[in-house]
Length: 479
Image (tube, rainbow, N blue to C red):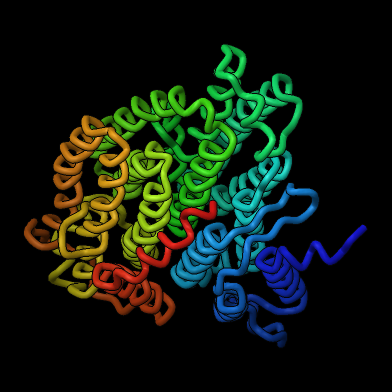
């Protein structure tokens, strides 16, 4: 066996090294809750430092490379997406610090970091898959530890229930997806992405195989009508895990879906574009309408994420390099904006145990900085200029419009107006609605401040740094 092939997988090898170091550190170091043990203390600094080093080492895109007969494929575009996911995970670790200080979670914080990075490793393999077997292994490596993360607070709130719902949904969707893959193999005789298109002719059996595959991916991305698990899981899971699930997991699955559609199902473009057309309309419209009725902020953000997944589909349906560029750029900006909102939700919930819309009435009077930063993030999610979210929506609308989907873009624009209402409801609560007993004034810890600073910087800088979009566009042709 040629072991030099492993050198192609520098991102995966580096992340595995981080996981092993954290696993060993968890064995020999003490969590904050047991400082009296005399052991060195395991806290947020170590995983953040290690993951930052990993990101810096691997952030420069390398040349196109293959390994294991084409089962593993890595190009600069895959590299960029992996770096984006790593940056998002660093922000999640920073925002998790306050939650990790609780006695019931401090004793398990090593498990949290290892499980989270294990899901990230699975996403890495899924993104670089050139073969459906590699793709499925990566998908399950990402999904199974995620169920443990969702149920992490099993004695608080509805975390155990959310974990059960997530794992059952994940198993069902994986079964459907695997059945679709088996049908693809049955009709073409290969699972290599590069070899399948030559054998596709759009037969009824192949269309059925695509439907099963897309249904499984629809559950992972939480597209309508495969979204029914999302609100309950987002509400029951710890806020940090919800943030990770809504951004990192969704972003990786959306990128992989486009890669598979463009590479594997290219001869069936007419069929999958029609499916995406109606799924996109349903996802954006249904999610926005249900978001209007939400009182719990985590449930509101759950339906917001379903709607955002619909917008992401606008980049996929184009099936062009412009669509790929817009999709990756959208994921990058969505990462900073959504994690910014969840960082505020998380710190407020940890300090006051309040998560409803009414609880945020008058937040500006007691915590003006938090209210201001959350407003920036919400404006970006809504696509209000001059924030970065406006440009991400503009580019993804332009990609779909240039692809000929004019009606779809018009419907998406109308839904953007609807989304303004529920995003501005939160802003109205913080700045205008009176409250006789608002959330008490408190000071955030340094890790939370760092998380908010990174998110705010991302929202502002990406709105003026066109070089980011141009750089992503340079590599879109090498997918």
